[in-house]
Amino acid sequence: MTLDQIKRIIEEHVPDCRAIVLDPYNDGEHLQALVISPEFEGKMLVKQHQMVMKPLKEAFATTVHALGLKTFTPSEWEKVRQDFGY
Image (cartoon, rainbow, N blue to C red; front, top):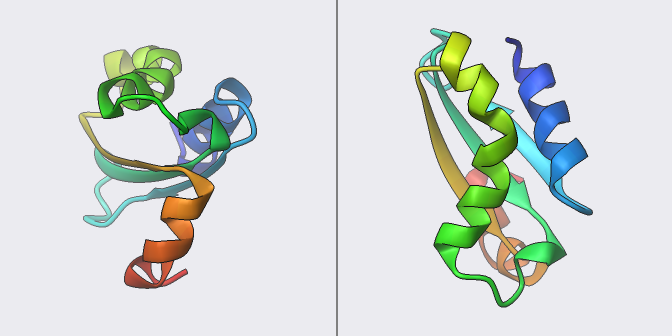
């Protein structure tokens, strides 16, 4: 599964989100995702991560070994995006 496919799955299933999917080790198995959505507002971190991971279950069963996940509301993202180079 490509980074673009994972990005598309996340963006199709998490309302109004922007997903950034990276392969920092360039191995196709250990990925990182930054997901920004107003739908995360007021939700516990565990719930935010469940919203992202549930639609990715199939990818983990077949190709992805690990996904480092960071979720942000738009206001949280504005505060930290420079830390990530965006």
